Image (cartoon, rainbow over all chains, first blue to last red):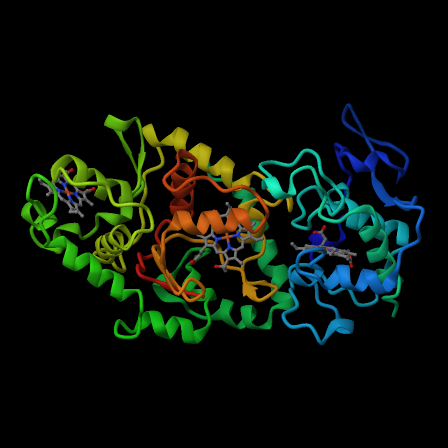
Length: 157
Length: 270
């Protein structure tokens, strides 16, 4: 397993529009003179309406929405063709992470690994040259994120 | 030159990473790719499926050769007010041997880079008094394929120092800048994950040595700038124009990344 997957990243700058919502950060640690915080989870749901796992399954597979299979393998979705291998397989991911940890990984994985290829699915600011059609919008809306998380929570080993 | 070593370390890491998951890539990595690999740089050929490679290898099967034939016909055809053909001045196509490897290059009169498409068009307007061919027209693609094909197998060798240096730097910045709603840079796919399966595609290093390429998906030949546009749009970012300054700089950087790799035009890709 490579470093890329496991780095408990100390993010020098933890910014981003939606992160201010309610991200939970560990005790600030100092790196040189800059105060930095290692963020590991995001406790508060983005919506009042609880997530719907069935809908979340659709968000996961849909190429225009999560398109998670572009980069991740998932046994539970064997019926779908072409699973990617850019990221680690997501089987049993809910046994490895809490929902709050998964939320941060979906909302803004760059908080954990600033150089990751994985998109921040709930971020709409600080982006460069977004196609007009998508400008100002995150990839997933808040309810889709919560639905997706409800589905991820079912992926237990 | 500003070679970013850490990037190569990362590249190694990414290979190691994908090695664990990509059984095919592992097998391929151990293979001796001959001229298609120079140091740690591998042509898109080495990531292509065996059937696709076979198609490229055989001139009679390679559908891109139809474009080379279009170019060959145009080479001898007089056009424009000067009543000249390319052959009137350049004689046989062998005069173009080795020309392609150094494009894009800095041109003092333009104070800018010029790629091969634009060089061909400059001969049309200035030397033949003919109209420019449009980007992606069968004429410009055909002639570009034909001219590049004269350098088949020769190592790519663009100049990135001196006057070209600021353009190179601009291209490098473009390459590493995240963009689009998906917020990815070229490097995230082509430096961090070559060999890995991205949904239905196997990622390559995004090299330019085979262009213009015959792409099965396009059912035809397309330029490197067309490919840039596609790679921009797939991360939901607005593309730049064909022949734009941004893409010229990016082209220089991409060709430098593939330095030493052989010209493969017309390569076949899926």
